[in-house]
Image: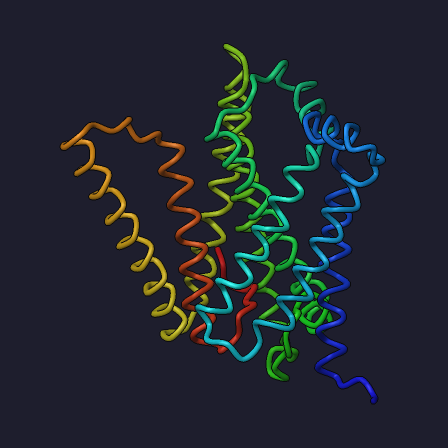
Length: 295
């Protein structure tokens, strides 16, 4: 039976994203505990590299088969769940980007061991960087990039990426990459030794300024409908964060709760805003994979 254009598009998405996952796995070094367990089981260390790759491809194939045709929220939950499984497998098997701490320490000096907040900051850095690079691919390549990074059928209109839209994608990419740099530099500042945090803090501010400049430029270029959806997304995020803060305040008043870390609040706002923006934009466009106008 001949392969349809839709099935080809799905194949391209699975291969492209699977290759990206493979490249990420290649940056890792075996986790010490996982390596000890593998050695006790008599298995080669290579299993720690092969398992995350296999799980990533399996997650992509399951998503491409299970998600299409479902409501937007259900599709987002499916992709989020499968992505969490793949990410958890990578984290259990490997220390990803193992060379990065050494490179950073050549500039900042020794870094302290990351705590929970620092780990989450690094995770958010990776998420924003991946989104930014995807949007950058749309800005530079256009319709071919849409097919390459989707595991669902791509609407014909989505492939018609006009020159003006590429400029929008370019600013979106700049905003997301600026946010990634800001969050990553903040993590470095929190782990840096005494007197070594000034440089990373300045870097974090620069990245945050770039993110906001991109957001302002995008906002000024939006039409009334697009602005309404941006307002909807940020309204949803504000409501959710306010509810979370209220629950925390009630718990603190009744049984006591630890103080809220400012970085944790910053992370929460970013995460909720990204999810809300994806959801609102997906509802508007009828697509589950929306890569533009994230800043």
